[in-house]
Length: 271
Ligand SMILES: [Zn+2]
Ligand SMILES: [Zn+2]
Image (cartoon, rainbow, N blue to C red; front, side, top):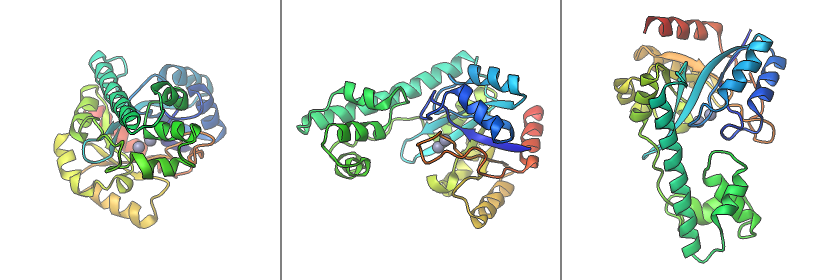
């Protein structure tokens, strides 16, 4: 049996529809998957239908971009997507993200660049907005030769167009997931450099760490297994699939042991 608990669709920044993602998961031999789109559950209803038709177990999930100071992402499993408070919170997070990108576009305009909000929207192709879309719009307008150049010249912290992220704090993200009856898990901890923060995240209600992840070597896996054990946290894992053309296109590329899923289910039924 194959398990992948970290998957994006085009409801956020993936390139495949929820249905197509489920079909790929089935073809890849996965039996349990979680859809974890950024700040939205919009892909879940269609994914559920498709998954049920193919006999794939689907765990409803989300990935909240917490971004004040750090760039911590919090995954949520078995969240109640029908919870109105939860949906209101997600809408608020998405809105804060859009406002930030709008302010960055205004800064670029004041800097003398002929870049319109519509250009960024076009570049985003309906994905949840982020700095990469400003970079792509700058590229399309010929201001830079690459996405990387856009970041280095304009968009990085300290750059002329930089505006700090206004996402929720990690603590708020964790509480939002707990209030929607979900299991909050810190995503890709090595990439987010969150080791020092973990005790305070546990205090806020964190229940797990994403231990199995494409960039995690056996040494890193061992490191996070130990941290999880120390704080009595669940361990989880997934590929962070985003679809063809994204560089993260291998569903099930990370081996997630079945006992991981069993432990999550035990914790869920006991809380
Ligand atoms: Zn993430
Ligand atoms: Zn992700």
